[in-house]
Length: 265
Image (tube, rainbow, N blue to C red; front, side):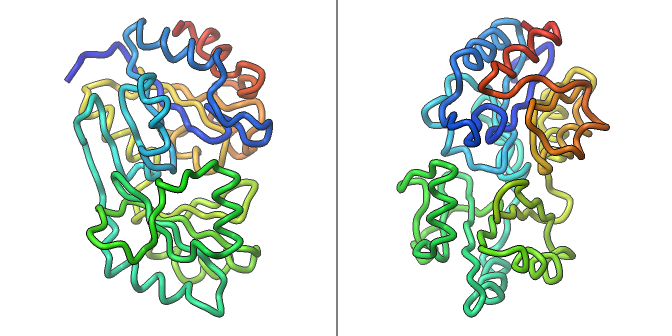
């Protein structure tokens, strides 16, 4: 593996892009910051609930990936960990989410995502909000599926989240989206923080030399784990006690400004 002076982790939604401000592509200032970080000897990694697929247009900016909420970790083309949710476990969850409950189940894998409930309006809204491309997600009954790392429950009402907490909180780590009716789920003990620890351990980088940028409640374990946590201008308030400072929003060049303030670029 390559030697790096440090490592910088970036959440994707609300951090590198921001659907609230209509920013579905990384701003030029963000791309410039990522390039300069790599030129200055830092590993640049996405740390997201999404799968690796989403980065197909911007992969040249990143050395590594912590995806699936920490279940999948890769650096310089080498897979560090890939924690699986078995098909038997998924089938039991599918049965609990079946009608009359109107919950779609998105299953994210190493190289492909699958969905049970693609026809539901809740999934179509999710697809629109996060710019999901058709080829990223296949029907669940597709044969020869890849290993599944993370689940997303997609629903219509707060009562559905109450149901998820009641039935699944002892089996899965649940991370509710701060603005929408979506909840990510991973095996117990798996979150962004655990993925970061796996990455830094593999690279021999002390946590004191790691940085993380995020905005949502599912970024809490990241901000708590890295040596220095930075939150975006629009953020979940629960992150504030653990962050070094708040930068600007993505639209206001928050990534570039934050990296500059840290002296990384």
